[in-house]
Length: 164
Image 1 (cartoon, rainbow, N blue to C red):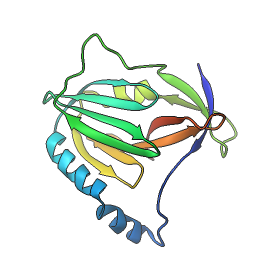
Image 2 (image 1 turned 60 degrees about the vertical axis):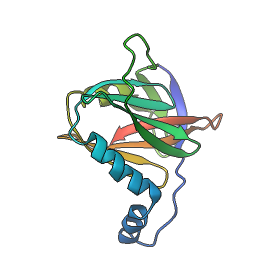
Image 3 (image 1 turned 30 degrees about the vertical axis):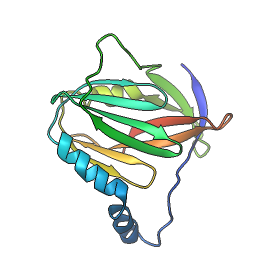
């Protein structure tokens, strides 16, 4: 199992209050895009998934897919009518050990399990900050998608985790 020293790499505008932050995020083009794309996928079941260190693709019951990927420091997404090919796999190591500077021991990141438990469940919403995205799925914790930077190289890693 690969172990990586990582840092959270957010490119966010600071706000004076939570209320200001929420209002600020809701007025962005990303928020409008999230609303539009939510309308296209709301209620669809997650039927399949592929990923690598830089993207996550979810196959939906309506024949579309949602692709989350990194564009520089920002998590972007798109809804596409393209189905996942049966013979193609983007998947890499399902589990990594991530060493965050603020934690004394490595965190086990089982990206396969995080997606597996959402299979067969309905998408409720996509929500976007200035550099991260949330995926709301029925009866599940909200899935946060954000960029991590590998400390040694600065290379980006698309990271997803349950919010608590």
